[in-house]
Length: 172
Image 1 (spheres, rainbow, N blue to C red):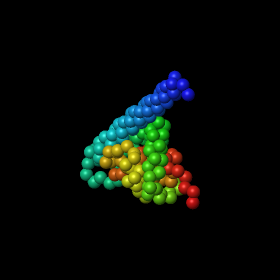
Image 2: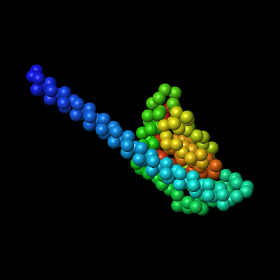
Image 3: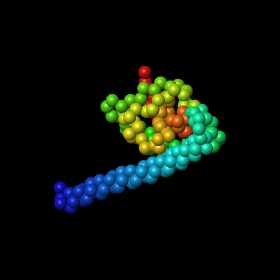
Image 4: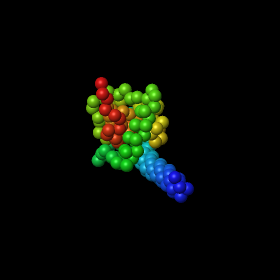
């Protein structure tokens, strides 16, 4: 093999490696920007929640908070906070978390509530998944519902948004 061919192959390999690193870096930067967009939406919701609690004053109950928030967001629907690009990043992060040993979701819920509905008896996602997801204000938490990820107002037990297909189907 000639020296020129060896040098050409080495340069080619270096360029491919550099391109792969650049693509990975630009994807990470895009994910960071996407998560920042989601966290701003979550902070905006938390501000609404706090404003509602201040307006209600004494005697706060989950039902009163939920009713007031529903009145403030009458047309709440899927994808307001979990935009398609945010949902894609969330799904990717959940899939990566579930590959770690001991990380699983045991939720067997068959009914998935919609935004502005009661979250029912759902429980927060396991810590191994929560740490993979964007940090939330204290008013919000992530909960599984079958293959769907719920974003829930923990004080009002109210569904704020959903990511369909966030968890893999169970093959029992």
